Length: 390
Image (tube, rainbow, N blue to C red):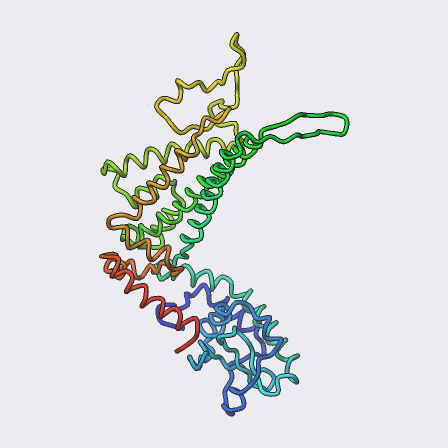
């Protein structure tokens, strides 16, 4: 066990319980390297849990020997069981148990796998402690889903535009609808349904935009050095959209403040409508009786200067909202934030918090050229690791 992960006293019983559960599965000593390294993958070994849990159990917690990296091998641990030695290895094709004359040893390997699974279950408090230690050191990666989330927004926005265009071109087209054999409903305009479907797509696109920004704002904040620890990111992830926006933009900047106000209003109206079953929180679904007929309780004078509004009758201008969003996206990737786009949208590389803390990202964010050079270096390193080209 590494010095930085020295086991605290309260976890000693956890280690002892895991060791007892393994029973006759003990650290192995290799005497015939050629036979064992030339061994074949067992079928029973395919049932092993995740590779990292097996590694942490055997190597980190129980001090089994790790033979290290090899050709297409990330780590290799020999174990002995009932007088025979086996290799548990994480290879390019996955984790497995390897042995010579493997067909005759499938039953024994199945017993090894069962014992390892039970030991991992007993060692759960240790894994939780290990994760807490990594978070405390901010020695973690943050998954980057920015590109996929943005693609969803673009797909829905594009679908809305196509549907709206179709509705426009088919304005005069009508079709006859029969409700039943006995009752004739009459002709209806095709564009009526198309406009309704376009509105649904627009609302979904706008919602997808806010989902993307909830994610990408945090990643940009890390790249800009505004959030560098796991604790800071956890707090930011749990915060409101407005806090995430402020982590990237300075609201003292007039343009940033203007976008913030407009996007906040759209978000409020969208959430107010969709999250409350189209009722809203201020009586938007109510209409009061009057000599003029049924009148919305949420009268126009209450909206003030708001241009973007959802409510009964839907006075929401989808086109205006999407135009604003497109304008904001261009603004988001301008100035010193431009290099972040290449990292977050042109790759699926995760955010490495240690790079945020040690200045690596700060150096890469200096220019698009510097970021591209950094991406090329990182992508090559990740490709080698994935290929186990050690």
